[in-house]
View 1 (cartoon, rainbow, N blue to C red):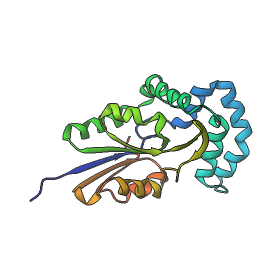
View 2: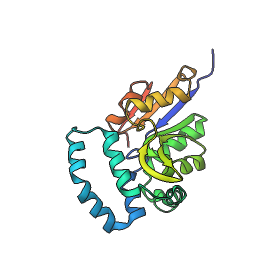
View 3: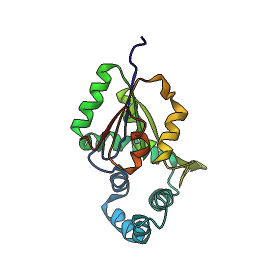
Length: 198
């Protein structure tokens, strides 16, 4: 009988963290005044998204373009690194990190799959010794455009990108930790689904 091989998949925002990191990152980079002014200008877009008149990706690209469009890519990347050093440790969910460390101690393969951009997630994952699949933001002429490369890493796209990276049939156990409808596709493949566990 082959030994048990386990995979642990964690959503990031509101699962490993206590809140959504996109607005926090925007505020961190732009400051309170520009953040609030931007939200007011983007309010029609946010309302349309809230009531499902525009898709998740389009709304997100409009937000990213407003706050970061035209920013030097290197500056954006450095902001992401600083956010992971200065802000992220204070919003990590204690119970979720305990679960993550338990999987590490067991020797399970661990991967974070998130709709957040890799610039403010990936370095932290690397420090933890775990893999990361995240949304990729387009850079053109060394500047941020605000558009997303391919699809936003959300919903079915999370599962598609997981299958692209990993052979799921290698695992006897699959633990999935998530908190929203964006994690539904992943939770459906889990042998051990953990929905809003923390």
